[in-house]
Image (cartoon, rainbow, N blue to C red):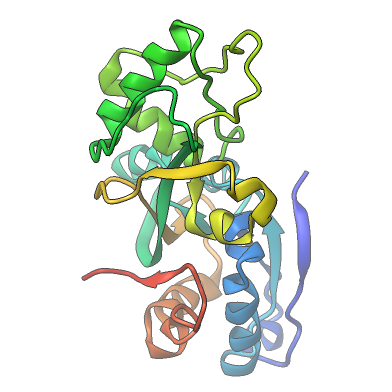
Length: 249
């Protein structure tokens, strides 16, 4: 079940028209980094829009947009979004912000990446090291955008998913993908045994996106997408110290 972040119930045209409250799916990273909260406050101030924020992983949000359980969602770039858009099951998909993704691993780097800047080649070396028992990989949480990114990157390796295989007798931390926000908030005691190994590959980005469901249309949906793309919505993205960057283009 989704986590309901709250209601925006300020007087506005949506309430005046007697419409059902807009159910807005939101990925947890968008909430946890404060971007969702900034948007929520600004929406209430600028639009007077009633919205119920439903926290779910990006993959779950997209399936609920597909089924019509949600009429609009704020999610992170995911291969499922590409498929649903191609099938005409979501529309009005827009990119609002982006965040860098990092490939991190033990500071001693037992997989021997040695400055490798191509993330796919680096993952291939990690897989080989894991098969030899020298290191291990920590998969991203189920249904997360990082899981989708990992699957996309490893699809060229003939493997559908990177799975964990414990390295016997090893006390080293695993290799994994982390967002810039996850890395920034990690306690120093954990970070000191890790190293950022690949971060400049242009594929290592997640986009914060919005899209509407074709099956369930809410009158406020189009207004909200337009507002998020506009100057008032963009103001919430680039704040000092935020891991989010403005969308390109």
